[in-house]
Image (cartoon, rainbow, N blue to C red; front, top):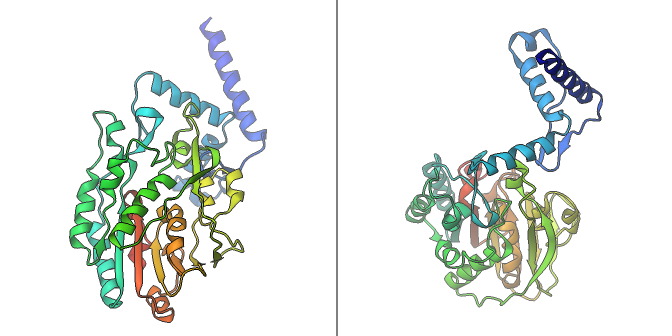
Amino acid sequence: MKRIVDFLIQIIIVFLLILTIVLPKKEFSANENRYLQKFPIFSIESIFNGNFMTNMSNYIADHFPFREEFLNFKTNLFKKIGVKRQNELYYAADNYLIEEYQKPTNNEKIVKVVNRFMEANPKIKYNFMLVPTSSYILQNKLPKYNLNYDEYETIDYFKNNLKSNYIDVSDILLKNNNQYIYYRTDHHWTTRGAYYAYLEYCNKNGILPVNYSFQIVSENFYGTLYSKILDNTIEHDIIERVIDNNIYQVEYSDSDVYSLYNEKFLNEKDKYSYFLNGNQSLITIVNTKVEDNEILIIKDSYANCFIPLIANHYSKIHVIDPRYYKNSISDYIRNNNISNILFIYNIGTIDDDLGILSIN
């Protein structure tokens, strides 16, 4: 009997390997939001240094038949036996996936770079907004025992060491953490989360905020955190935008889209790119109903759903993402007579952000 079982197992393995070879291959996994391993190029050197076998192993793993179904099965099996953490994600209350926040290593370096940048560009009003992640704001949803580093240590360091007006949005987000202010399956905040930060920004800058209404534009969003575990038992997120009847003149340096929103992304996996057409190197937004009030925003993707909220208040918004903008930001400031700058970054990714470390 054992021989029969062993023989059947061998037949199944051979059958699956044949399917791996003959089935059509995908270059990109939309669910995981990444490119899959290509078939490795054979060479004597790659054999001896081990790269060929490593890449071949990754190729087989990436193109194994029914791979995504298997990953989903594994994820749900782990959940049923009580596993609370997978791939640095916690299964939190109310169907939230919350990414583990690890102790940062570049806080001091980032603060020095930003302070040096501000010193090189004086006579400018500076605001800095460092947005906490759901790991801090929704900590009441986390498993009791977790490995998260305290994000407020990072907030406190930036607040006390940056030579700018620090806009602390943690309190207003904590006060409203019973609302839908972070996506369940993505690392970004929602438009409602950005709205509360907008209220705090207006409060700190003497601006009368708009009492926006919200409109749902998508009800089937699976974000970056879902891509790490492929757990389809978690309900989809919704994406909202604010209702604003103003007409803005929007220009992207890398695209021919002319709106604050790009609806094509609502039919794709990366639905968060609906806001500001994803990550662009340079954007300008003109509001003809406001006179002589410009601002430059230096940012990561957390700003993408925040910027449409403040577009009402400025005649022109310049938006630079240093990860993609390769020219001198200081030159841009001088050439455009910038006198007001807002930095918006999220705590979860700023430590690894090479863009902010390169601002000049």
